[in-house]
Image (cartoon, rainbow, N blue to C red; front, side, top):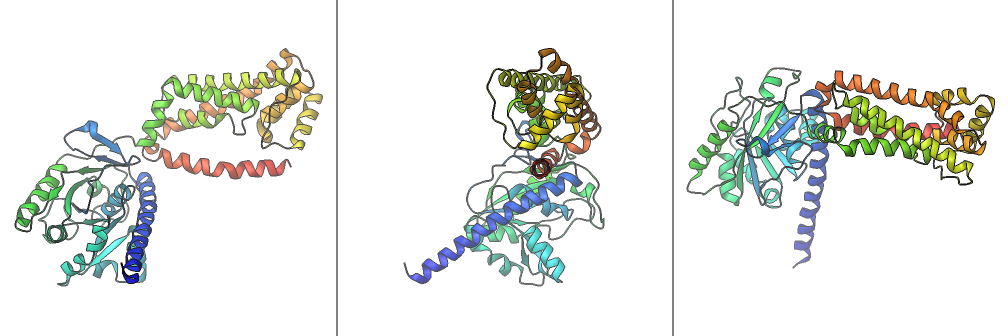
Length: 425
């Protein structure tokens, strides 16, 4: 192989790698945006079988090999929804009108940078522009084409143009029909702000396009899309909410909450209420919430008593992310007034294990330590019940974006921990 060929192959491989990374990032971006502004995206691998539903956060199985996606087009949100779904598993580009999305720098940045588009002329050279995407499609990039040519003004399916199918026949790619439901009701042509409704993506059956039967393939794809969008969009909780809810109502969730709180009372550097707050927002107005709060309280109490007993008997558990000043302050407060010391711990940011350690070092009695746990239990109860009520009130909004909200909170927590440790250093 010549050096020129090697360099060309390397350049193409590098370009596909960049497209794959960019598509993945765009999928995360638009998945979050759609999750906040809509009721979330639910994908159906087989629209006739509801059990085959996979929420957006799970990877959808796409056909292998060169692939072109054709879909109905009623909204600017269609591109975002398809990129959010496809970009998680394969690099993706959306065919767009060159005269519309390349008319100024802002439109070009939005289409090329945030969506990932393949511009095509609507002035007579469109198929040549499509053919130029052949190397990318053969290298694994999924090309999305809205075969109606433009957005439907009334939500009804228009006639399909043959460009996508001619391209598929020319390069040996398969065509995958996808029906999009909910976007027309949420963000129709001419509107500027979406209504918060559910979005469904229903995958049809891949079509092998023969050069001698392009019209047949066009009719088949349109017929599939028409069937895929025949029913209204289904409003379903997304993967993040469903997964957390299953844990919250099972024994695993109770065990995680108990042992996390127990560990925080002994050595664990993260606050006891973290998994409680994570799980309790999904239980709704059910008594399960009180059981989750009780598990956290019990775990924390056992953890604090364990640390007190261990230190009193000559063994000091490790205390990561603590400082000498924390121990000095805890010791001083416990020496002054045992009861008020734990009340102060509710607000000062010093881990409860530090107070438990100093209580053991001072050989406080079991009764003293047990009584001092009242404010500790009260804090967990207030945070737990408050999160429970807030989550229940906001459940309609959180069902589509709980994973993102939790991810943001978890990302911010190390910053707060860093500030606390720095303050007490």
